Image (tube, rainbow, N blue to C red; front, side, top):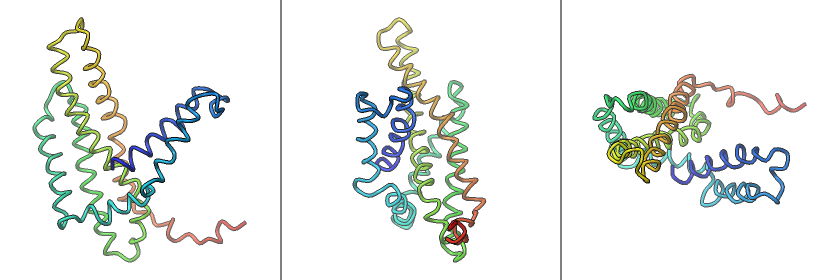
Length: 210
């Protein structure tokens, strides 16, 4: 998750978003973002491409210790959610986190069913990368919420006039954005996996040979 997600999201941020801030000149080597785009793209390929990392996740890492490793991780997420879901400062954020936990469990159950269905076995690699990204978004959501709970308390203790206030306020803002804009993707992936569209498996090459 750390390698695959971070390398993919850095390309999204730099290669498809930041580079546009320069307009038509963005991809000229005169500007640093062009170099950053080239430098970060290789990270999706080094030490196993993102697809290889994704297949390793769903085919091997999920099954570590007969599923106990990921089972413990999911239990940690649930315990954290239950202990903090009524926090008045981050009520909306924890609501999205709770939905993501439920969605992720549904993804795992659906994928386990695909393993037993010859007609849907090919959907495992089809959905693997999206599941890798969803896994990291769930993890990132928890880590940012943990930071936000501490940062919010610290910011209130220090007060707005303290020189460190903005640092902690930034932690809170980052968590809010991520939980309300990125973490909902987990539920979207669950819906796609639930639909289990097999058109990509049944389409013949000659359909596109024209």
